[in-house]
Image 1: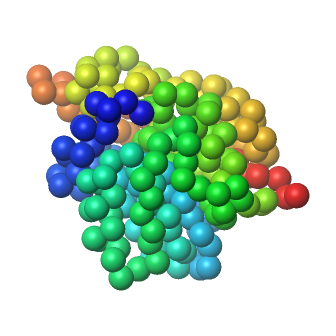
Image 2 (image 1 turned 135 degrees about the vertical axis):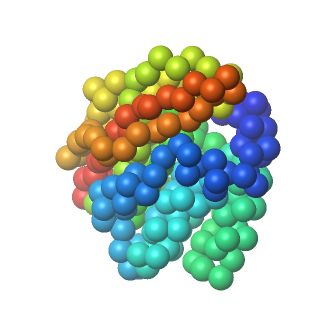
Image 3 (image 1 turned 30 degrees about the horizontal axis):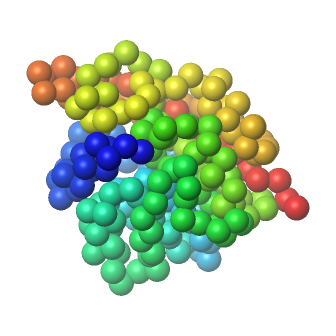
Length: 210
């Protein structure tokens, strides 16, 4: 990701929990956790952890969580929030995740793919870190036309066609790939008062057993 993206998220980290509530709701978190089948004893990587929207639910389900983010300030927020829980903060980008091969049982990533320089490469990196039988779940924006998000929130991509996302999952060697609807909307508001209402997809794939 660009330095501008890192700077943006460092700047908003202290306000992110409130900002996030304006963007999308609990339904996204519930859908992601259900699709990843997060449970006790699992090790889950949350890519683009932010202040811990998905990580919190995974911890509550009994998993250990590795939270990854490009933003030092976001990681500091998450580290403080989960100080007494099985949470590791690791700084890194989507093109070279700080994860070992086959390190985790599940990878979840909410609203990070549209910031990735190469979304297909990001999916391959996430799949690389999965143990055989592990699950990747990505929630992100469907294709839209709100160009102001490129400048105001440093979005690199204006969402994605679901067919492209499915292809990236398959190219990463994942099986049982599905791309469906969370039935939730992302609703950011521009500085000039325009509010978007962008549908959010959920993509899921499983790493075949060795």
